[in-house]
Length: 304
Image (cartoon, rainbow, N blue to C red; front, side, top):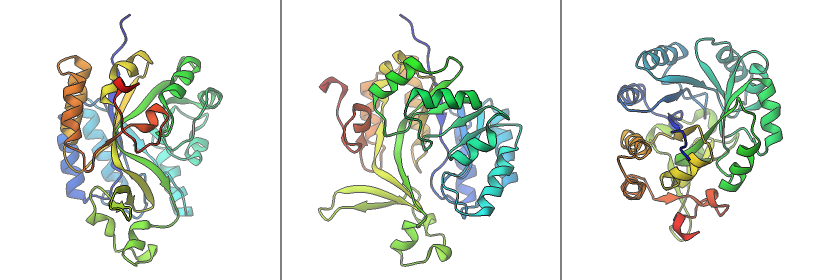
């Protein structure tokens, strides 16, 4: 049986990069074979290297380059001003919107199609069905769910809803009202001095045994290890996954995109690509959640 080839997407940049870094990054990304690009600040509203008009201009440029563009909203809303900004985002008619919080879902429901990000807790087919009735066009599997859970949900998902799976990048695990990066520098959240700019891939947190454990990214906590599901491409195809999401990192993102594209086109083996990509990660790989194990674990498909 022949399965369709999934599209490749690039998730929103989760870190605080300068304006020049962001614009240079997306200029390079425009020349890669990625199909869908998510734009916008999803972690902290204090991060404003680009204003709303800048994001929209960038979105238009990427769309002109042949990319499908999706605008992403904040994951954790903490102030009325953030809600007001989200309302303005949800009124934007030229691009699809990614809801990363149920407030965005409520603003979009019944008005226009939308995407849900991995932070929206869609854990069963019933939830998918309810959101489909509200206008859900595509959903991203929460990163903590397993392959077996995905298979069950794929068997029951509404026919007009597409599935996207996070396949490469540090795992987004949690969000808090407290800014961990500011706290690590003994600074209050309201006077953080934008210390996140010093950590283009987040601040590494290690255990007392000096084992890399988590990454602090402002109010977000990520895995220290990088998820890599390139070895599971055949399985993802067979499961009927429509889109594969790659999360940006400060270096080698273009190479990651090209390797996934090469494997999907059959011009590179997944074993060869997995070995290469492991060398391009800040710490190392993980895939435990895919197998129903601890998320930081890593094992090969052949071990099953």
